[in-house]
Image (cartoon, rainbow, N blue to C red; front, side, top):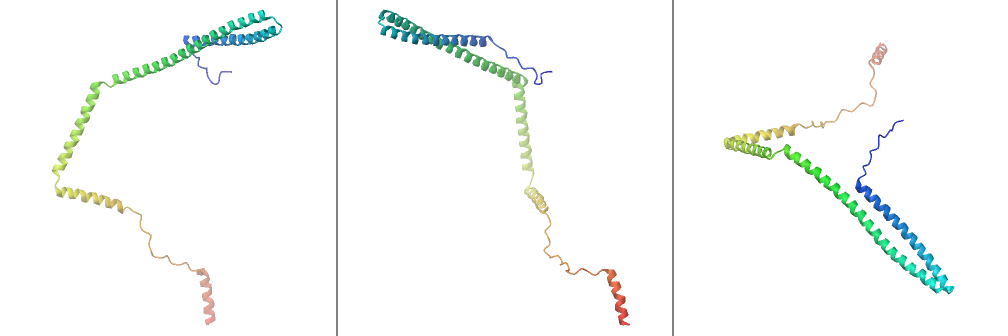
Length: 206
């Protein structure tokens, strides 16, 4: 059965990623060593206390000297752990800076291509054409403004008013105010029934 979700994109592991992983592994080993020495120092401290109770002062003193030396090792280990963590942070930050730099490079290349498509001469030509079009429109406006008399202006305003009035007249017709005739309450007599009743009245008249 094929993979329904398609192939998973492989993640590219860089040398920086390998370096970060190696540094973290060394840091974890130092932490394990630090934990081991701490437990051992606590045991030797308890043993030195027992030796003092037993009157074995020289052995107790030797264990305390050993504990002091191990304590110095712990300080060095702590410094090494701090250095490793700082180096990991520096590498990770450098990776972020590289990605930002790559993004800036892509953006710069894109801008260059856009500038090549639209050169400075082309921009100047478009601006000149736009300016010429604006000047031409101004000349037309000035010509129209100078050629129309006051009578022409009044005629134009009257035509505008007529168009506006025509749009206002396009309204729905008003509903007539006259009331509709009332419907009779009794049902009207059908024509056949009237024909039947008429001979009966004539026979009675005879």
